Image (cartoon, rainbow over all chains, first blue to last red; front, side, top):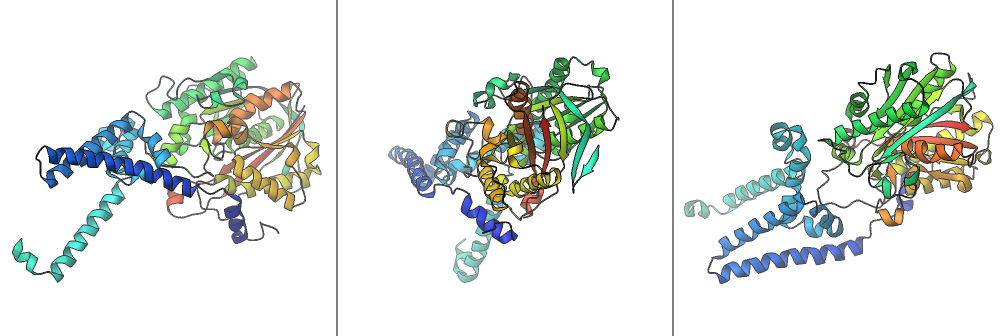
Length: 154
Length: 334
């Protein structure tokens, strides 16, 4: 076999030669850590409800507290270590979103508050916001078209 | 000097590598060859406000250290060849702006150090200079910031990813010395085999390294066993295995005397660097620290140093372009 005959041959050879990420192990770690973060959220939620707050307010408080913890750990140079271990486990919950905004803000502080922190803060989270908001608008329009009653309700 | 074969230059009055200096960061200081570096830093900032400033300071102090060790007065150094990974090579030009030596800023990605050695030795052998310095640097944090993600972002790297070395190396070349001598140089061609994964630079650069390696053997009539060591710049563990395979498929078995600077500088099992080290500072510091010492001690008498570079940037990667590789070789003999 000559792996250098064509680019395609070489790419196939490289794919075979390169070690793969340990997917199963990573999934397990993501499951454990992600589940743990969600459990913390649930505990906060139950406590809020126990103190007599309604469900909407309780879930808002859960988000605020998880974002605060994540941002704080990012600042302490700890969240990247958790993220390295847990992958999607810490990335998918709202903790990952907070981390993706705080980390560029820290990184680009050296370029100043306007062109650094201000301009670069959303370099990682930006696409999530753009497509998340776009999708919600699109779904809202479809909802309005197929459910004209709701217009009168609003 | 004379061109032999298709792309090798034989130096008639071999250029001496008089002295070298190397400064590396804290992670490299925990690696297996830490004792060979002139200075290891305790932290990545080295008292500066930004990583870019820290990298400039590293290359500045490395160059000053090499000049001091060589005992050649700075005004007798004719030219300086230096480069790095940051946009427009700001680490070298900012770090060396007070050097007061005519300056060539060069870019060959991670092959910059050997590119400098090639150009410097042509200058010296062609009587354009008596003393020349060649340097290169890289910094893990500034490279991550430019090429990948913020440091604090909690993401994972694939096993093929490499770790940019924080460090710099500098060599002083001179006309009338006692060796080690640069005897042949083989500048490389740009080779692109269509690898697009910027987390697998070793695979992207290995074909370029192979091209330069085979061309060097053909042009000089030498075989792998001529050298005590064949050392590539930063192919890492994955790229090293690929180059072993590729050269075997072309009929050259280099396994016994072949190694890679990115493999040498870190301990794969203890340091969590995945496929090994990379960056301009990798080849520069490993040569200036470890390899030059081995040459001086005569543990190695003939080495072929092939620095490899991935000629990519953040924009080209996002636009889906493949990663062209390059490799420059210098033959260094006692």
